[in-house]
Length: 339
Figure 1 (cartoon, rainbow, N blue to C red):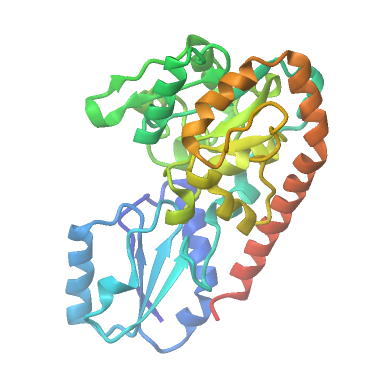
Figure 2: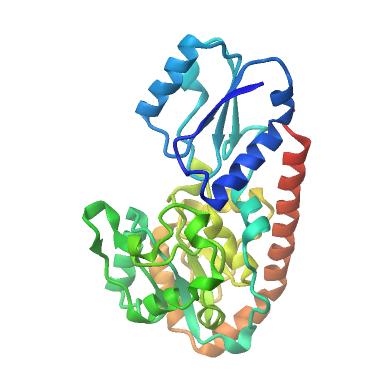
């Protein structure tokens, strides 16, 4: 039986929280039907004050099992937090365990609005695109590096407000800001999809569900992905951002240590880290090389971007097919339930 679902994160009014809860309870269906006392501890926005609430419950109620769940944000809760209790602890979601579930792949499969038609090489005239909404430290650093290299206007680059310093705006290229806001509000589910969806929060729409303006997307060649967290392979967490260039049929690099290669290959995707040896000897697994590489990319003629896209089309289609297979594998895993 599942006695309590401790969730201190996203509220039930949010579409993605509804999918999260449905997925969790489907996966734990066998536990819900047996006679062992089980609690769910959701890692999203979890802090020590919340942990104290959970401990107080465990001190006064029978608990046989704890299901630590990490779907929406990087993992905070781990089994060591419950070492003082004689309970079975299972980690579900973005943990390197048998119960790993890629929640954002499921979200992509359920709600992401894939473009009806993505233009091919003929539409490409801009070297790169790098969308950033929340001004996390690694995004601000990359933005500053691009600014110092005079690359902000060579590609499409956005950056939202820095919420951690009194809503001080981080400067953005006017072109990119218009690009981010070009998606019509009535095309999005965003106000109920996730918290902080309103563009007033960061100055940029929290566009979880689309690739943004298709006109802008189509003209850009390389997608530079800045994930929610910097070290994807260590923290083992991704969001919808890493899959957008896959469904949008664009080559991409992840601005992360090792280019997030471990995660990408884990889900069966091929990377583009070695596909530009014809113009650069820089190791793209090192994020500090991304800005000088982009400078080299921006120095190439449009014909290079278009021809390179054509050369990579088979890999782009492979990745799209592989993502569909990965999404289906996650659905099947949830359907089978916890083992």
